[in-house]
Amino acid sequence: MPDVPSLFAAVAMASCAGFASAQQLVIKPATAQVVAVDVVVTDRKGRAVTDLGQEDFELYEDNRPVQVSAFEPPSASRGAAATKGAPNVAMSAERDIPIAEVSTVVIYVDRWLLSPAGRKRAVDQAAELAVALLSQGAKVLVIADENGLRPLTKLTSDATEVRRALAQLQGWATQSFSVTDTRHVLEDIHTTIQGVAASGGCGATPACVCALPQITDIIRTYATSRLFEAQTAAGRLAFVANAAGSLPGRKVLIYVSEGLEQRPAIQLFDQVQTICPEALSRDASALFVPMLEFDTSQALREATARANAARVTLYPIDARGLTGFSSMDLSQADRRYIPSAGNDMVKEANLTAQYHLLAEETGGF
Image (cartoon, rainbow, N blue to C red; front, side, top):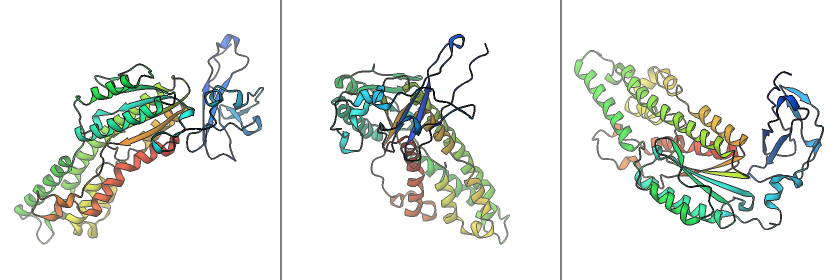
């Protein structure tokens, strides 16, 4: 008998604005007469939908419809068992997390995207959220990266153990992108423009226009580095989400970091328009084309796809806290090289867009 082909389940839900994930029950090919598919449907808040019938589902194998020969209603499923006898669903941390439906909480602290100050804030928040979930019967697993991803606790209901593991992270080294990184890039741009102006080779053309290819190369180098960091971080997150799929019940993955840029270095391309408005008026594509070369959204969507398949809801914590305006920076006398309030807004949106993507694609916040 040939190998049984992989089974893919598609759920058609015209009346439900949620999403579904399916897991195949592995059966030996020699005895495979019926393949069981466990389907969990949740709404946009990640809560289980339990009033569905067989007529609400369609099953496909290799894009061909397959007859559903038997159906076990959600009320008898393992998911319903987790919430049985809990008519009053408590909400954790005063936010919309239905605790009674959550069996497992994974706290993943990405220390490669943390500063010391951000780590302190976010780890404390994660600890409080974990304790609130523990008090409602969930179990917690803490994961961090030390010579590879590893658990710092077993799957535990002990709040003291969770707090101890998170406190351990406070002494670890961090490696976060900071304001000094972009400042160095802007200093390199300034030096480059000054060098071109001093050479006198541009004639009547503004030096910044002559230096535009060099400027874009400087920003591209920085953006490439940030793109690699973001893609690597997305890979780690996808790995954790996929691994969490083997844990029991509905899973919440609390992801702690200081942001993943949607378009690395977009704020620097944006600022070049302030530094050299002549370049924008002469050839806008020289700025906009390289700006669009770098995008991390696809890597993050792959991570959310893995999370959905594993019944994992993502709750990102932004460790940066309140942020100030770069206009307070007095390191440059030439204010063109200091980000404006508008430029800061571009940078902020660029960092937080991916948090919204992670949460919204998996039903978290």
